[in-house]
Length: 438
Ligand SMILES: Cc1cc2nc3c(=O)[nH]c(=O)nc-3n(C[C@H](O)[C@H](O)[C@H](O)COP(=O)(O)OP(=O)(O)OC[C@H]3O[C@@H](n4cnc5c(N)ncnc54)[C@H](O)[C@@H]3O)c2cc1C
Image (cartoon, rainbow, N blue to C red; front, side, top):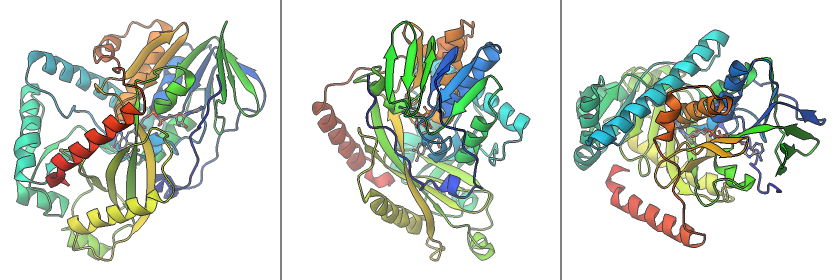
């Protein structure tokens, strides 16, 4: 099977542009054999490879990555390690699912935190928590209040903030109300992904700039890259929205583009204009319509706004200019007291959703497992899916496998072009319906 439409390289990712240069791992240059091959070096692939190495210290594991660690979605996101599910009903079933989410996410955060500490990964890892915020009274009643009810039912610590308390915490009076929860982690995601890739155990070999361009599965896996071939009896697929190109999860995955910007660092005077606030992260009650934002440790403002259905996973020419203009409007609307602050970096990344919010996890065929489609909560969900795919493949009895499997499998989708028309119509409706929360 030929793999077409590979991920494209670009240098727009602000999180990695503000880091020092990194030494990239050598591409695969000669044919190699391994006990395992992992495809993809995002959170899912890196967790899978590390866990395989922990489970089978004498096995040889090869990771093939089309781009560079930190340049994929894992390095381009908003840098929230999210521990809480956002929308859960009140039924007992929903609560048990919420508990499963919590166990999975918190195990992932603990696993990542131990690696960060052990290897001293400088990624600004901080247990800063986050604010979940509504822009309007309607958003508060319709989306924030049910979230708070869920926190109460789960007995999760939280602090409810009205408009003025939210403004004091964030330095902007744009939001009507918010709830603060302490469990989330904020970090520079490119630094984290690089750090995870550069501290893999000794029996793992990572090859960057090594896209799989042809894949065959017979007696074992054979993966051809531009210069050489890897042969391995077993494979973990961790390529997120590209999985269908390998013949798996076809008509089950919905790739979307997501866009983010970083401003230049604020000056002391500008920081004072915000009231000298501590670094913070805000997730919106309506993630499709509104904006995720951060005020970083180095006093930059992050804006994550606009999610678009993008089956090609290639943003159209000129889209970044349009996105940057939209982000500029978001910035000015929320921070009129910072008229001189400019956007320094704007970039696009690709997330993978499923219709029923279920992960693409599990055994796909003899000797093939997958950890894809973490529904845009990849810091925790892709990490845990990669780790558990490795446990499942190695026959490790981990009770969290049942938790992840209980979230279901991605529902099948109608064929294109009907799918495209349906998804775009649904998006347009969601945007219109939620327009007040912009
Ligand atoms: C702007 C933005 C903001 C986001 N904010 C957050 C957030 O704050 N918190 C959060 O949890 N999540 C967030 N997400 C989502 C999160 O980044 C993803 O869910 C997560 O990175 C997915 O990890 P992954 O390992 O599954 O996939 P990826 O990081 O996409 O990794 C898959 C890898 O597979 C490689 N690959 C694909 N095809 C091939 C091939 N043929 N050969 C070899 N390699 C291949 C790709 O190059 C890629 O590196 C955000 C995403 C974006 C874009």
